[in-house]
Length: 370
Image 1: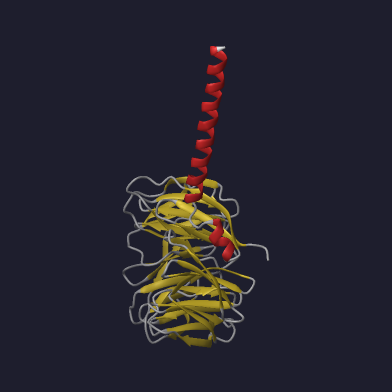
Image 2 (image 1 turned 120 degrees about the vertical axis):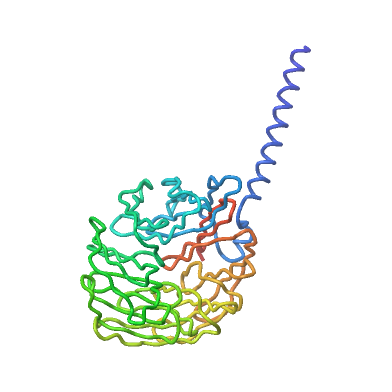
């Protein structure tokens, strides 16, 4: 009889411990979300996935890159984790450079990631994270590298654009702006190469020889990257203007429009199929009609575009809120508290929203079905 009582008591204790662990687990789980599901419902959003990345003590997650079908998370110690954009599954995780080395740009060309790490040009396999090729450069680079099927285009601190053969990284020629200004951005394809400078120049050259095709001059330095979208170039200048330059004729660009923002611009615009979004330093995020250059709405405190879907723009603000704007009525629809979010990736190709924090949490949100 005593043995039976002990058995029953043991089972009861196991049950109590199990229930406690379930409750504790549930509380812990709900507290680990970057944004709670209840808050997301108010903005008609849902969480597709969230991952906790292996971030060590005294290390922090610092950057998120959307490249092709993957999202890359980079830590302060240059530890990189690649995730599938749809599922959040880890594709690879590894240290891609020693701590302290600057990782400049991450782009995809012909199933190959391109970056410069320190003074080294590297090609990375996106499936494994291993280096395919690398070249120690004899110069420091000022902006991400560009390439086409034959050449790499590298802007150096010597204020010259260096053109290297893609097979052996041997320099073929170099060019510079006539005013010797520093190069801040480069885009390249098979028909031309375009680079921007801190002197306000946008210069196009032949891809295989030092021959200038045209030059366009803004009144101040070009801020951030040139965005090539079809036959148009979009760029921001510190003269407070956003520009759309049509380059369908390789030798004669046409200024389609320029839009004057509220303050000095310090970064490139975000370009989607129908809209252009520009942050004005310390002021607002403005949505611009891509075709006409007219203002659609301006959100005070808006910092960046997170994603766009069904005529709605999802914006992160300086108050750590996610605001949903209607691009057709120019009205604010709803907002969500995102106090835990410290980093994000701007998505201009689909409706998925990628956010994270320094502790290594990365989440993917998406608009819920209406």
